[in-house]
Image 1: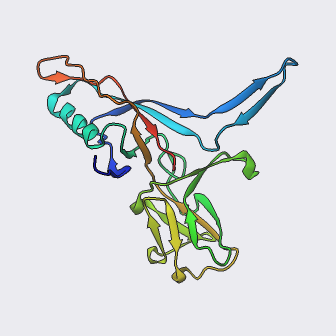
Image 2 (image 1 turned 120 degrees about the horizontal axis):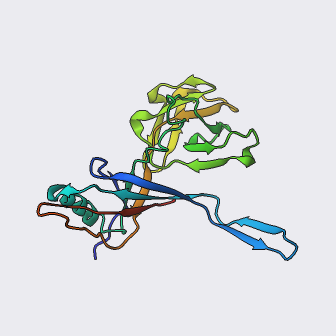
Length: 218
């Protein structure tokens, strides 16, 4: 078989399916002692998301489009993008994006490459919050600021395949400058199952009861 790309920069067709459920998965090892105490260890820092897509009874033409999308991804072999309508912005879902939404760190005098990330939690102690790397941002949604001042778009570039921002000399960075950003993003996922099961309910229509997809961590 010819070598395939591990990821296709394409969004699941949102007009064909809707998310019926979402799970946020965290692995933890919990050891219970005779005394009644317990010890908890997190196996991984990052959580993982799982979605189930449902399709209402559909015409064959719509089902064909889903089948073609599945086949083009070689089933679970090749990843793609999914729009998580519950969590797709650097701010709260009902708020407007600003360049001050997420703090990306300080300029140290040499490193001008910053990873987009989103903080979950409100604690001032950083150890009490969770920081998720954002690797599939939407370029036209990005806004970047230095010390609260919005940068011109020619002062930085964005790698949409990794979510990293490169700030150039036009920004005139100084040591200690605070870098922040606001953005929208998608999630990199793959099909979970190695089969796509279609139920023919009528002469010219059918349905796919559930299409599970899982997040791919980078």
